[in-house]
Length: 75
Image (cartoon, one colour):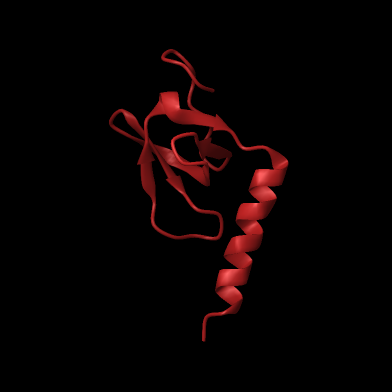
């Protein structure tokens, strides 16, 4: 998934932004960037395709647990 000629993961799949380790759901492409959204929703961010990594099951689970915990604290 990384590298200059690498393909972009399918929308709906998960990837890691290797710049900061955030896990996101692939929403699509805008220009040269891939748009990612945190599990459970939230603000999308742009990631260069060469900075995408594979979302390992443990990283994805931790991201989902954080989102569920955040949602449970909302009034």
